[in-house]
Length: 547
Image 1 (cartoon, rainbow, N blue to C red):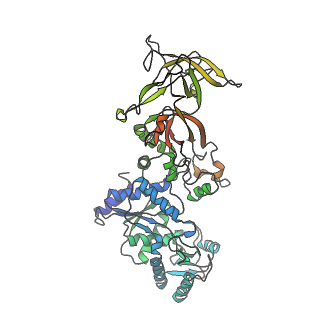
Image 2 (cartoon, helix red, strand yellow):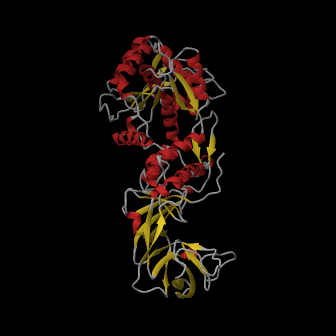
Image 3 (cartoon, rainbow, N blue to C red):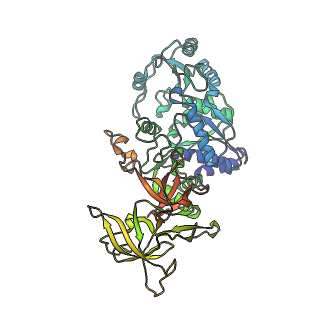
């Protein structure tokens, strides 16, 4: 992320003497109406990382100016997510803490003749607003006297009017080519209790009015936000200027993060939760940070992904495989290896003693001897994965097959001698003989055995449940959904597969590790909600090649 255009702007501001290193102040302003997702994490990362780079500070400020769907539950969840990513805010602020100041400044604008109370309803206001090609029309209430506006605004505050009947609008220019400058609403009536201020207020400032006021009061030097606010920047500056602030923050916009097969709309994510299409905000298929955490993604991998995704001024669609690449690279280095048989079929080694049990020493990580070794028990009956056996093998199939030899990973070479099947011809018991001279070495006669399969002892294993996850949506670019469809029409019916009776070595549950590589299968993590369940984070390999 070094060398991006935001930092170039800040470098230039420092070079021109506007600020010194250490004075840079940013803020992350989430709305507490849901759990933050990987898209919010980009804004979070840019603001906190930029402050850190310049030795400055970053405030966490909850944008709680719309209390209808905001809740303290989301406030605490957002704090937890920021801490989990490893960032620290300078001050934790709330937009609601500035409501008195916002009201005072709204009164100032009325007295200055720069704001008026309007009686148009939402539909009428839209009609009067005009279009991109036609100018708007002045509201019939635009020329009310200062005294009348002050009286009406006071009555709005006192709860004398119903929702939607009156708004306070900035008096700017109804012919402006920028629709955001056509007398935008800066206060509306909402008879809703607020999670911070209770029933003190029944009027609430609009984001475009409250946000620049909050930035100016907190001394924010660079207000970093996503690209959809670029057209709002003239209004941001108008509010700062006309409210009389000497300190003038600089708004800079960057492109939002869009991921393939992923929905970033908080409204739709909430709908997925409320309709039961997912198992809560922390469902491992969700792009929320708590969902990614439960899936097994780490703060390091997410930050590496955000660095690689970069900062730009143009919207683009990032391949989800880049995020998978980042976690795979980390876990390939760090995750201890364990053996798990996801689709088990039993193998009997007929020439192995019934009462014998021996141990083979295997590394916890083949490339990291410092991670030590463990002893894996071998007994007469073992489990292998059903996919590692074929009654009628295809070409170049080097795993277990009738009359064929295969290496049991870290142990003996065995030869399949007989297969018991069910009525449909599926194997239910495989008989083998072992070359007991091989141990975990090579045959003494020099014959070559190409295939290797993983296994666990049938007498020395545990049963677990494994969840295999895929994309939640079948459509790659969720922005291309037709108007007559919804996200629900593109839910992937195979986005999760639950496998029960998975056989794992007992060493899996030993120790404090939560992330593992199941050899030849993928990377898995203990599910934080359900003991005995493991979630696949990502497969072992992918064709994705990062730029």
